[in-house]
Length: 241
Ligand code: HEM
Image (cartoon, protein in one colour):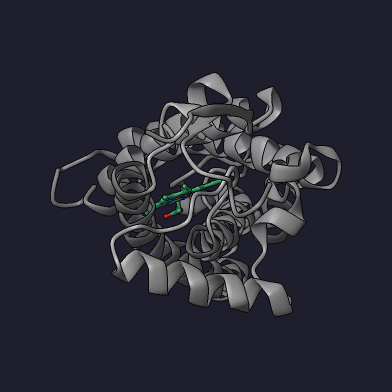
């Protein structure tokens, strides 16, 4: 029988990022689905404002956590860094080929950090989260006038004689109609990106979970529990030692 060896992999900041992000994404998806179906569910304007406020607060936590993780990818341990996440480089493509060939034969190589296929899915997840965060932060200003752009947008759409600070959501009598329409045109690409980003993210989350379960079953090494304990136990010499 091969000897099991334990390796330190995910450092504490990476694990904290992962689980804070997990909770925020669940909350954002759940509230996002209700916002999407608000009409069919008969949600009142006050209800919509409350949903958007809650969504935006979870969104701020997600965005701060994400920025922090992107900085940590420059300073964290070897497995937390961009070099271990972003796909690319000559040896990377060789490792993809090797991984796929051995996966097809039923015994993929073991990795301490992300395997080469996981790197593609993690990169896409980062990209989609960033896209949701940027588009969401813009949208936060367009309906409920929340930061970072809320006061600028309120100043843009307030009707003459209305103090932008006093502007209320869903109160068309307080808005300048022409400015409001301009602002809606400005917001359109952001809501479109946020909408399709949501579906793309849901697909990627499913791929991420299936990938983690497959890696756990095929590679072994407690891939899933490593995100709690920070350690993997492997039976072979890891390909990324
Ligand atoms: C995992 C990340 C996120 C997911 C899956 C998500 C999902 C959604 C969905 C499905 C909607 C409904 C879209 C529609 O009505 O067409 C929505 C709306 C919204 N999201 Fe997000 N969101 C995320 C992150 C964020 C972040 C980081 C913020 C900002 C801090 C944010 C702010 C908003 C706002 C303001 C709306 C309402 C847009 C409107 O006025 O109709 N979202 N989100």
